[in-house]
Length: 101
Image (tube, rainbow, N blue to C red; front, side, top):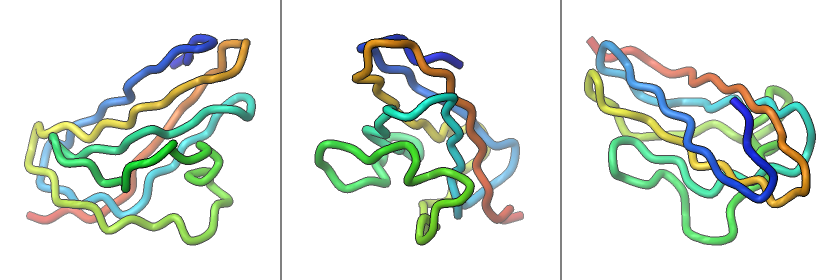
């Protein structure tokens, strides 16, 4: 997906089975994006504030494991991402965790 200049997007995924988020990977095409919130269902997994640089969730990031809540099937996990820069930036992401069957 692409985050427009000065805009925000929501990345959304929903598991087919019970699943607990352990790690979120985000890979932008350029620096500058900010993660404003991560939610499991309607429950925020972040502490309020100005957000975190998306690079905090990059593949090379250290200490970025999560102990997120368990998602039931079809309950969405969402990531709100802002682009305060003057150019659009592409982003892709992936969630890794444990299935709870």
